[in-house]
Length: 106
Length: 106
Image 1 (tube, each protein chain N blue to C red):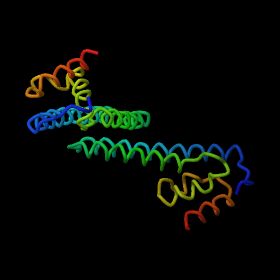
Image 2 (image 1 turned 180 degrees about the vertical axis):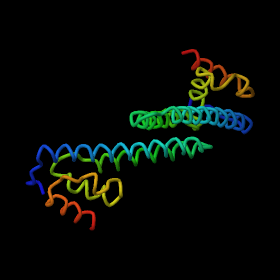
Image 3 (image 1 turned 45 degrees about the vertical axis):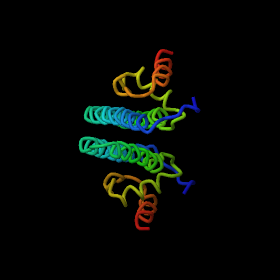
């Protein structure tokens, strides 16, 4: 997949889809943080929130890898998690879409 | 200071003062967390809260060391930070109180 060429138009679509998914994921995390902090009652809740944020940072850093060599896999995972819909990546070449769907189906 | 003997009565006083200071510190941290989470608006706020909790965990772990060889220094620091008052450790021997005050004054 590292040989796949991305046209300028595709790069624009990819960037927009990638950023939108990341923003949505971070917005959801922010709401989780607010909700958990509001409900927190004791020290164990403080450290559980810390550990949750540490883990989410790792998950998000690992998942959102904007290298063209990785984007097919990234988009495949995001579709599977329903953080993206097919319409968000409409305009990518049919070859790329098929590879992305393949990843999604694994 | 490692040679200092702690009577049973002193151990009770020490334990109560230590636990009370720790509980107060954790309660303050919990309020900080709630306040910062409620005001958080974006990703950078999420990670700032994570980093703040990570740092506070280290600070608190380092500060609250309940070994009899360390308690004089621990209480000295807690007095200096006004997390304890002299009355909280009333009943310790005059020798210990003097050493604690000495640490506080450094």
